[in-house]
Length: 511
Image (cartoon, rainbow, N blue to C red):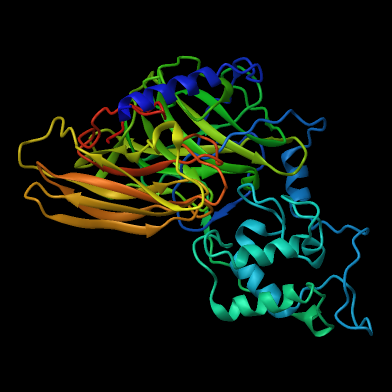
């Protein structure tokens, strides 16, 4: 079967899957609120580490009975769980201390290496905290017959799928944890109770974007709970993992271009990603369950964020092409609520703008890579696999000799992804590696680059995976399936995309 044929069949399957009875009817959504205006709920500062974003998984769960407020959820997330029914091993027979303290060297390593996702408040769907001795002696999330510390030792030594993701931690740290875990993860001593605060992984504060000069204006697109334009009530994030799409009429009333895309989070621990798309829909103020694919909507991907990411900012010479006044956009949220309760939330995204034409160049995003992992067969289990796609730019609207300038790459895969590599194939036959980075599902960062594509040049992007699931894995929006996307921001606007069909439903692909 041809590549195009296999993708079309997969598209048909995805579309059929959209007709679920679990999908609620359209409802109204929170209107755009200019940044700096009164927010619908108190807004907590959000933190992250480097940058970028993109899609991930989908698994729907029924709503929980209780619906606490955002402040209730924040308090719950900040409270370490202590189960009095768990019997904890003492450091020694004398019982020299209360059975709740991690050894100081263990606490230091866990905070620095694992604390970003497995802190007292988990992030991005991490199934458990790893901050107290009790946390290590609970039944594990994936195998309740075993305790957490037993699986922790397996994962930190798993070269194919280590935790933290990416590669095994340095030998000194690994040795400390293996010694402690192998001895039964016993409590520390009296001296450990006064352990200096461990230094966590450096984070980058993501404060709400505000205008930096008189010509810049920042807008917010927030979640909301009622199906009507102008609503400012909280949206209820149900327990579990699912996608929800909110539709908006753009808030700007004159032609503009984007300078920055930011975040206005209330409960970051419940959010895995957001994506901003153009849309044909005119149902501003509504929302619905969605699947991570927008086939038939003539959508173009504009921006996004995922766990480990931060704000994306245009360089001084370029503004990002935004839809004109009167048009509509949608924000796709991947929600991942592991609290076991429904939570009220008014988190939003931010778009900062300047008048159109202010900057020398106009930029857009294009999706490179591939969606074809042997069609429905997918990648085989138990081995490393690579999949590639080659972009042949349309160069629409360009002068004959001018280059396409790529200034940002945002690689995206799911849990089996290991690395992304991009190579420029020059028109004269030479090749030039322009990107080669490991991929970490929990740290989806963007990279500043400087890549020029001249007439006759193409660019090939290759994803490397290791499938340790025991079954074949094909393309799909779930985090248990896979993707191979190299999102690229470049100018001139529209010159990199070539209109290739994509299961993502976006029209700005190139492969």
